[in-house]
Amino acid sequence: MKKADFSQIPARTGSRPYPEPHNDKLAGRTSWTLTSRFGLSQFGVNRVELAPGAWSTQRHWHRKKGELVLVTDEGEEVLKAGDCVGFKAGDPNAHHLQNRSDEPAVFYDVGGRDPWDVSTFPDMGYEARTQMEIQFRPLKT
Picture 1 (cartoon, rainbow, N blue to C red):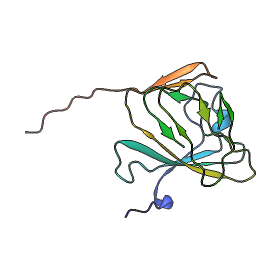
Picture 2 (cartoon, rainbow, N blue to C red):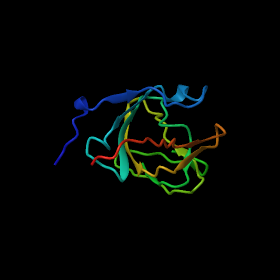
Picture 3 (cartoon, rainbow, N blue to C red):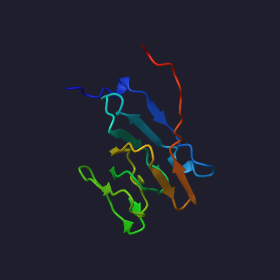
Picture 4 (cartoon, helix red, strand yellow):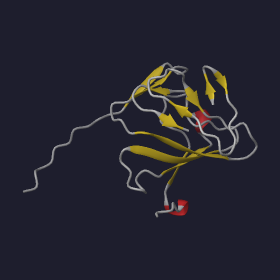
């Protein structure tokens, strides 16, 4: 069994590459990508820590991939240790997590890895698409 040693996995801190001024709420976000650590290819896993007041992402929804992880269009849901929430692909009910406590909050984000997925950010008025790039290399003979 491979147990994650977070001291050996590079942490990503700060905000995501949203168009300004949409990065400020993510300044207290730190994440560790576990997908490559475990050699996963069909889904992604991230450990995410939110400092008090930090957001996980801007509110968004995915057309093609689901997520398992809350402020939604349907109202707020308070989560505590051991709780689990899921977001079905194609459901335009945008979501994100906010840490409104006085302590760091940790969660694991598990989602599909569809290269054709489109993420919609209704509050920002944007959508994001994966940038696929074709690279040619000689055949190995």
